[in-house]
Length: 100
Image (cartoon, rainbow, N blue to C red; front, top):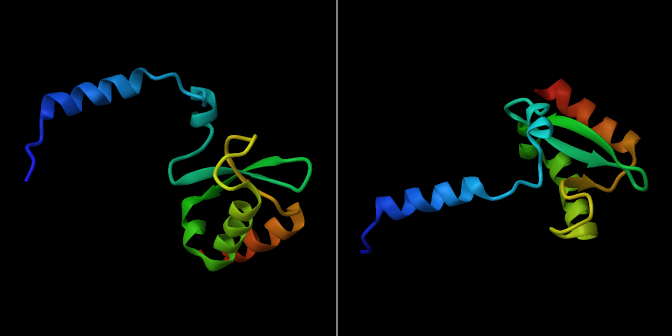
């Protein structure tokens, strides 16, 4: 069993907080706690803020699987991008809103 060195962990955390962030504070502050921002669209991407609870639903997971197949984990938007038309996204999210 290894020894945990608290001072080295604290030092690492301090260094982590000093790293430059890709996301500005304004972008973070407009996403309420318990939500995440996603980009939706096939050509023109629009940003939506959805509850994290959506991640537990199979219909939303299907959208995420489609995103993974198309973009993998690295793509130009830098955020979670769902490559479907807005109507399909609204259909899924409206059903989820009714079930929450």
